[in-house]
Image (cartoon, rainbow, N blue to C red; front, side):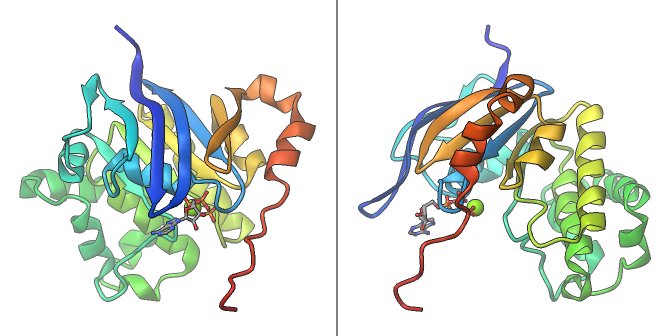
Length: 246
Ligand SMILES: Nc1ncnc2c1ncn2[C@@H]1O[C@H](COP(=O)(O)OP(=O)(O)OP(=O)(O)O)[C@@H](O)[C@H]1O
Ligand SMILES: [Mg+2]
């Protein structure tokens, strides 16, 4: 049997006529951190959304823990240990910190959710101090921790994180990456999307680089570092094309 926890094969994702992901295959092994890099619009978030069941694949397959996910809805993927920290954090700004965290424990027995909440507050004292404050009143860095905490409330086996460093101060980024490291040490597998290759490659075991919906480069981080020039060429134009309506 394969030791892949997640196996994506020939994934294609279209929005109408536009192809966002054009035949991507990637694996995440048990207890591995895999980084998915790529410039704006490369298809990173689309692929993550298809993995967690937020959008469908047009073709290709996704297997998780040996199961073909084609007919498995997102809530069942979550119940089977997949948790997704979305790009832009998506904290519920009107809800309190505590209520936000409980959203991540949806469907769990109360006692287990309370136990996990305790663990999250120990991990993030800053959230414990602000437990009754509205999510929207937190700083960007605190909101990122809240979004990660919310995902951890499900006790994930595979944690999917989309651009956790985006828009954060260096100190907040350090805190986020320290968390990612410790979650990995606790045995969780991670699929991490980043535009900051240096950050991601510091924590990842393997890397895939997406370019316009295709895997342009992949390999272990060691080997990838020696291809820095190539890597930079693929990631070096992180500016989105001008919106015609602007
Ligand atoms: N809901 C949508 N409807 C139409 N097109 C979309 C939609 N979401 C994404 N796209 C398009 O699909 C392509 C890939 O987008 P995606 O968000 O997956 O890229 P990304 O690599 O995550 O980019 P970024 O780094 O900017 O977050 C882009 O061309 C984008 O405009
Ligand atoms: Mg994205």
